[in-house]
Length: 190
Image 1 (cartoon, rainbow, N blue to C red):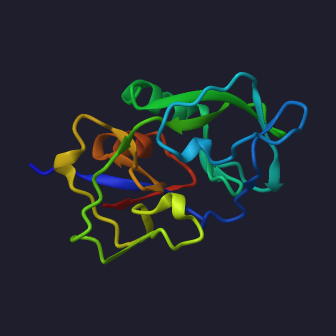
Image 2 (image 1 turned 60 degrees about the horizontal axis):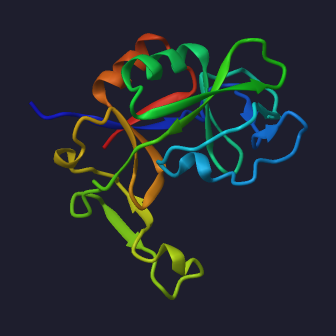
């Protein structure tokens, strides 16, 4: 039986949803590298972080905060990741402005090179001539994302090599997140 995987995305269609701003330290100073939490690698956090509200609204179980798209998840969603994918993620407690419930920064600490270029609708790569020549050979854009599941191994959640915007979860993790009623997340099969 073929294994199924899904791109975990934000559901922007939740009525009256909140929007979160970039993480800061407790003194309100910006995090040095806002992109660190989407690289698919372990990170070290030495101090507790605070997540300001960019636009007030209905709290979500998952939100991608600020320009750096830092995944912030509720305690009940964090418990699913902690139980089902402890080797693939790091969970850091954070203070979300105005919330007494626990929230966590989700760092997906695994990266896999598995995009199936031929099965995708279209892919474009960065070149040495691009503004970001340091990204040469990585994906500039991917339409109709598809992955080669034979390259995934035992990972339950991971980022894609060369295209870090996606968080890919396996079917079992997706179903567990749906059972706890994840608000704000949607799943697109890849």
